[in-house]
Length: 403
Image 1 (cartoon, rainbow, N blue to C red):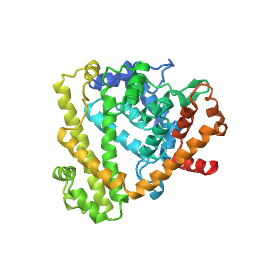
Image 2 (cartoon, rainbow, N blue to C red):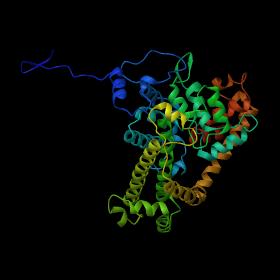
Image 3 (cartoon, helix red, strand yellow):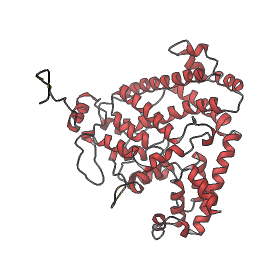
Image 4 (spheres, rainbow, N blue to C red):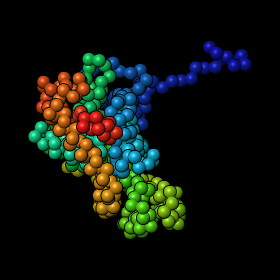
């Protein structure tokens, strides 16, 4: 044993998986999903000595190629516009931070929330929602395209940790959280949930519901921030329009300090004050609204959560949700449909259409690994999946090479 001045120095106590699991059982709320109670993995595997199953899932997602590609995929604003523009990667990190904050206050499983948050956008194709709409149209006779379903395909099949084992082999709870993501799952999502044995009749876990609302809080606040930072160049007009929003008035009325009251919204610092207050207040509102639902529905266990399938337990209050509706319309008019965003989106859409047409007509130009799928899958579906994995930059480069 090491000594210091002749006195033995004890070895520091380490925290292993069993300790973490027991800590969860002892401290988390009774309706939280504990790692020890996970329904497991499709392919059984040995447990890790130091990490819980949900911590391992999070780590596998972070180290996946699909996660790294998010750094070069459009969120809303065209990527070449600024080094500070948000990407799918920064958005996912912001969602995870918000999700963990909500989970911590509600005393549920932060690691499970974080894993779902980090994975939720992996299946987005290049050029944001316009890219998704285009792929869905091109694949209309081959099953369509849904980024939530493609996220699941990436995690379950296309990402590989072992040479002869497809997918990341994530836990039931993370896979369920990904497939049940979204306020209104599509019919194809529900069908896939049933196919995978993920119980479509059950409500998602509280942790999955938190990740869904964290996504909404993140994109509303970050899109407003990006609009004011990279908008139409008329900062004074935008600032005036923002001040007229009900959500701004509410944020200002409940602000923790007088900084927002004094802010002119034209400066970077003032915008940060606004967005900080907006996120913080939304988190607090979410927690209070969720607590009311937990009490009203007498939620005392995970099974109780699962039985409440008619509407989410994790939510915002109706007043703030209505204000968010006004904000989303404001962002649609002043950001999502602006000329700068549309021009770049149309450039991406045109590239997707051209690359799709070339590869469908000349599948020999697909990479070997993708050509190997042509014997068992519709050619259009294979090409669509290949395009969906691309970053904005790779798509444009490939489009130029194929011309």
